[in-house]
Amino acid sequence: MKTWNFGIIGAGLIADFHARAINDIPNAKLIGCCDKITDKAKQLAQKYQITAFENYDEMLKSDEIDIVTIATPSGLHAEPAIAAAKAGKHVLCEKPLDITLERIDSMIEAHEKSGTYLGGIFPYRFNDYVVPLRKAIDAGRFGTINYTGVYVPWWRTDEYYKDSWHGTWDIDGGGALMNQSIHMVDMICDLLAPVESVQAFTATLGHKMEAEDTAAAVLRFKSGTLGIIYGTTASFPGQFRRFEITGTKGTVINVENTITTWQFADKRPEDKEILTKYGKIEGGGGVADPAAITHENHARNFNAFLKALDEKKKFKIDGLEARKAVELILAIYQSAKEQRIVRLS
Image 1 (cartoon, rainbow, N blue to C red):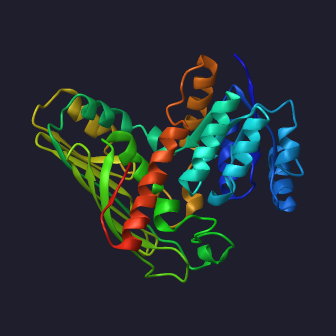
Image 2 (image 1 turned 120 degrees about the vertical axis):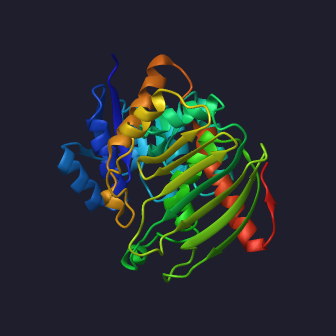
């Protein structure tokens, strides 16, 4: 089995998640890291006994490195991702791929041209409970799905927004939706039919920041399903995220990593087993502290990327797939700004 060598671009909080994830994978090896703040790169390098490169240009010159992960602030993803493609390196990029569709499309184009893989990081897709939920949807057990809702009532302190980029439009690309709630927005994009149109409101109610700390949107899907997205970082002390799907023949409610409701008109023997297996809430999931999130699903995300490379198959969260959540969030922002219904492409 080939060992894939990694470099990490960016050495902040999320880079440590990347490093731990890489170290958990048998056929992966962390080689180096870089950051425009040299001391951060040196600290991460010392912790994991790797090389601290001066910048990503120097890292991309290394013949040793096969894959780079991008862990820089959201609006600083495109440039290193495109440079990596030109250097023949595969890329795994933190959410969002970037904060504009134009930049994301440039990233996709660069990797298509070079023949390298571009993958997104959406760890929620790798939660265990998603497997039976996806099977139930694919099997039509919900009948006609008439509603889905995601709720992310999280909390962030004022201190969180005092750094140089969180909650800014030019680097973070938004607030509670683009940064925190994007994981649950991606779940909608992954599991359900494409969204046709949105009508939304956003507000900044609990913090001094440029972008929104609270957002609410009503969705209409191309299938006819209706839905709601609610995301905030102004809900003290922070509550578990919630995802629900209901239809003419079934309802499932997921709270954090737990299935709290699993009811279908066509009862099956495995239903009781599913409720037993996924009926316990585990962890706080970063409701108030981003460092509280575990790295385990990052490792699953990374491992799936390596499997796609090994098998020379399409990665299920490729650039086009990771783009969907950004497109939906940008439509929500546009609707809130222009106070009208916005239709997606």
